[in-house]
Length: 149
Image (cartoon, rainbow, N blue to C red; front, side, top):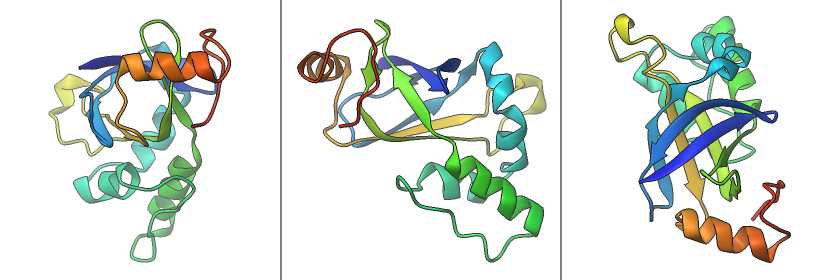
């Protein structure tokens, strides 16, 4: 498993454990205080497995299908699809994911708080932490700078 920090606009919003060696990988978000920055959007766009999957499986730069939804739900899904999340490894290096999505199907009892929030990431080359470190060095350093692979 690869331990990652999910980042939104430079702010850590939570931790996630992702299986390594897969093109698509997913896990449960363990929220940090920074999650409050996106909580209202994630909650407005969530609530069912169908809605969550529309976001979690969405390719980079695509918008979810919303023609069958009420306006407020459709709008929330579109706003969530526009958010750009990143992953960082334990060393603070950017993990080169093609896209990182966050959604909440709210399929875990309410007592768990935000523990039903899912993170899905698409990796172009099925990288683990070591692969991310190697690419970070080859494209400009290990200082956690942003780069797209």
